[in-house]
Length: 252
Image 1 (tube, helix red, strand yellow):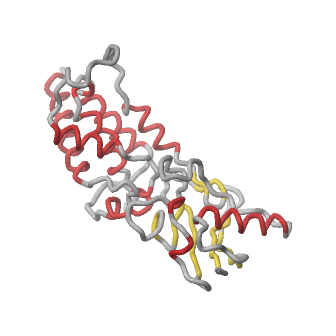
Image 2: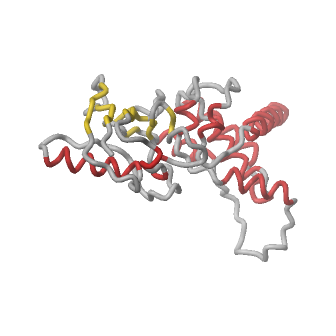
């Protein structure tokens, strides 16, 4: 199939950037979306043009690196998949496809479809870990955890930190990402010791990075490739208020 691509081109972070029209060579239907970009880039290199810059790594829907929008939707309109899991059989011969980077002040564009998402790394560094000594591995049944809590923690831990939630939110809020990273630890006994410090530090870092606030549009939940529930945001808000209250009580 032959396609018309409207691709965001921006050579330097300080450039204004623009949508360029690129005519693709013949693309096989069995190709993935990123393989299609590879084919287009080969043609551009052969023509002496600068290829399209885009992020990718595992190409298996695990790493979250393939952060771009397809026809205005992060990762594509299909539910529960990343960009690298989109296949060209979803499109028709002659289609026009708009391809742009994730848009958020906290995700500055570096080149073309590549954005700097280190803000997520700094949020994780602020508290998304367990630092208390937990000892060596123990028998799985020696620390009973209610199944609903274990399931909720496991579901939240599925977050791959791709940033689609931020790109889809009208406020560029990172609340779904932060809530997933906080709640998958806060729901487990190992995370109990640092739960108050964790939630306050990570929310404060999120605000410092310039992400917007959540106003319950639920666009984040709709585009999440791992189907993380927005219920985690409600739990995060509750944990944050409790933690701030406890800190106020113990502060002189």
